[in-house]
Length: 376
Image (cartoon, rainbow, N blue to C red; front, side, top):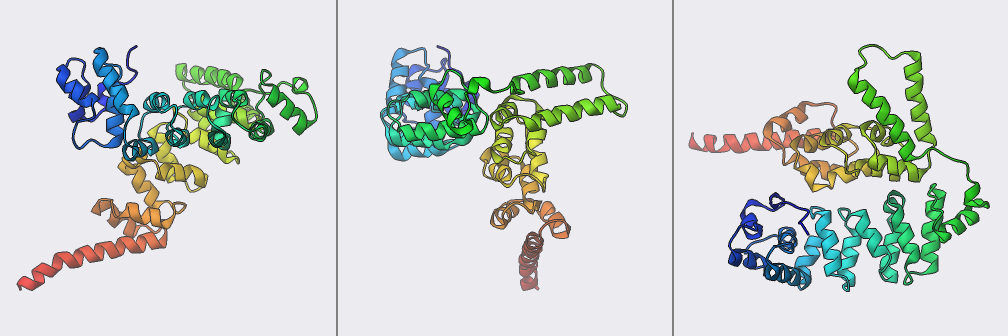
């Protein structure tokens, strides 16, 4: 089977150890985990790539090394959201009998929903409770609750709680008896009697058609009353959708759908939009600048290492009054002097941030003038 990741997933110095065209001893060195000064995330990614090596001995060695990694190495890697979902999925099989490792995989936001669904069917009772507590995943990926209901290890109360939560948020799965029973408990009626509602798929189809028409013939004039009403109608329909359908639309829909759903009152819907695999850096930049964005969405941005690598996003977070002061102050000290000067003059940033920017500049100025004064 071909490896789903390419060599450029690894840092440049490690690529030679995973390149199928490299000498076998070099690849075997990587498979044994003997490459010095390798960060845990890079090491397990290297072992993942080598697990697909055309040389069966190299592949088997890499797999065995991954399975026997010390906890202090595997634990650091499994906690990191910088680890690719494909690697976490592979490690879930490598650590099938290791409770502590599976717990970290279930808690990692980078873990694929399909991985969580696969684990949901077989994990222990305590880990089943962790699956249940991840409400966003339950509503975002139907198969997670479906597999949790099939798991003989979890408590009936865990399954009931998961099903009732899903039902209250509009999820309907006719093939899951526990969900149907929960629907009767919550709503007092059989789920088959439920009237047809808008689904994410239906809205996406209509949205896609409308946007495609605009791309072919861009709107160069003010919207007609009919066009404005159509947009309003779509917005109203999305507003009336169940939470579970909104989450699916936020995860799989386009930018316009995400923009609407980021304003939703339900934080799970907002989080589904900002964590969508389709979300762009440009959208994240807009959110980092927004003073009305949900605080949980903002927290996701300022705790996400990949976003913080984008300098403009970090600068926007420093200026945003909704970002906690300790976090904004920490980012402030990593900015370029020019931007710190701008912040010191910007009355739209929080006063504490502005004052700290001024204090930093005064301290730097004093340090610069100090040696000159001494020479005189």
